[in-house]
Length: 143
Image (cartoon, rainbow, N blue to C red):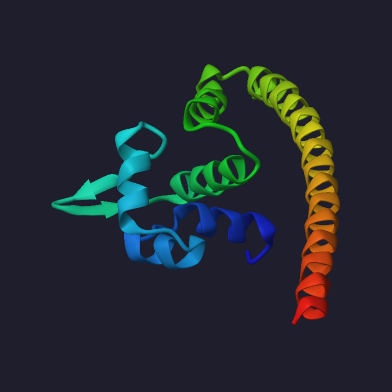
């Protein structure tokens, strides 16, 4: 049986070394150890070797996505930990939806503030460049 369910099962059974995840997600081993220390990842251990599973890989992907849009590690952990409630992910998805929408509003507000700051800087550059031109012209006249 080589249908998509068999493929999903084999993907879920796959394990990853710290090196493989670091390479795939462009992070350092120190980053993965830090996430483990913070309780965001929980790899199995074989001696000193960390063995990451499908769940760890998916969580890492969500952690990095959350960080990219500005969530703190605490917020990310809170959302990921809601998966354990066993309510069909309803609480997790509800909380995630609310937090994502709040973050979207915050980022849009930030974008407006950044656009305003850029416009201010452009105006200031024009003023300073104009003053510099005047000073340069006066120096050239007096020489």
